[in-house]
Amino acid sequence: MAQTNIPAAPAIEGATHVHSGKVRDLYRIDSGEHAGRLLMVASDRISAFDFVLDSTIPDKGEILTRMSLWWFDQLGDLVPNHIVSTDVPDAVRGRAVVCEPLTMFPVECVARGYLTGSGLIDYRATGEVCGIPLPPGLEDGSRLPSPVFTPATKADLGDHDENVSYDAVGDRVGDEVAARLRELTLAVYRRAEGIARERGIIVADTKLEFGSQGAGIVLADEVLTPDSSRFWPASDWQPGRAQPSYDKQVVRNWLTSPESGWDRSAGERPPALPAQVVDLTRARYVEAFELLTGEKFRAGSR
Image (cartoon, rainbow, N blue to C red; front, top):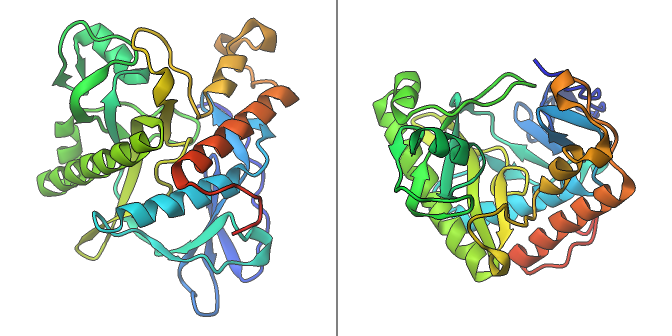
């Protein structure tokens, strides 16, 4: 397992720390109106290649939170979500939400409308993605004939998620739930892809997480952010090459360049990011937020 090196979560009065992921810290609220519910806090941490980097991206947690809230509003008629309130402690205001505790499904629900990343690797090896045959002759960045559901297992922190077949999802959660997860994932993707395209952004793919609440299925965690999706400028889209992006590809590109001096194959921790990479990454996140929402981003303005 890669050494993720997640810093200790800060103490929050009236809440007990439960879990930390690569970016988010989760707390149980101990008292008051929301006692028993969860406080989900988005940090400014950034991960790449299964490492949490020592560098942070200023305002990233607030951008992710505000973008997710905006998307939850756009998708509310398709699927319920876990958000209860944005009335949170001052220490985390703007980058945290109160949410309902759910029983999470052990699967990453991925929708792909374009071929790239691990999907492209699978396609080049087999002509398929997660067992779904695709037409011959597709390239990096090709638009698929129709969006596909390409689930993955949820890996332990620091390990890779692994693409799996739809049948494997059925084996884990049952055929009825698997069918509903596929239906919801593709419905969310189609809605989001259309909205984003009108605003000049291609959503190439996205990863969603769902949980159960009673007999219902609920959209959870973050949704359609640069951390969970590939966003490409629609005006620059050109199949057959790597696409410019609004996500953390800036960070990945620098880490794998000779300039970084990082030997990934040796299992070393990545180096700190230079200031220009941090600034460019923040600018890409801000640009994506502003294009999608039509709002100007001002830190702490929510």
